Image 1 (tube, rainbow, N blue to C red):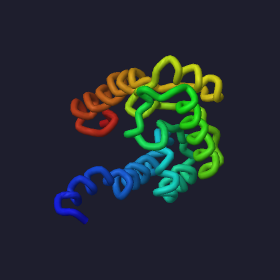
Image 2: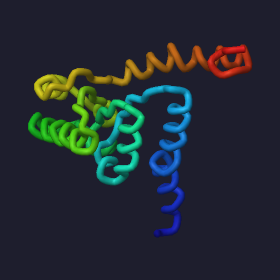
Image 3: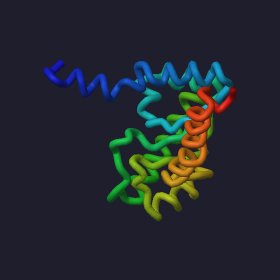
Image 4: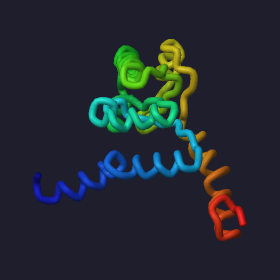
Length: 155
């Protein structure tokens, strides 16, 4: 491994090596079911992550092959190919249908939206929903926690 590469690799791969497993355990312990936005390449590179998601009954949705493969400047045919590949990969590894989509780096456009609809994808996360959820739930939970001294605001 090239000098200096280890730091970047360990930073980028933390989620797959450690973070995912910690979160899965905590969520399972507290009965929280996940809805997971995955790069479908994870199915090939880390099938054990997909197996764990399925064992926990989590929904898988996609944001393409890799989060670094943006939809900017992709033709309709190229977008359709990525979406179809994602759908088939999710089905192959999990048996689930691909119902939701979050385009890599939120680079979707009007073409993406109509292709998703034509391909049977039922919902599209735009990033606004995620920000709104965090604003409404996360910060309220943290505020309650800080005020009460316990997670979830319970005394």
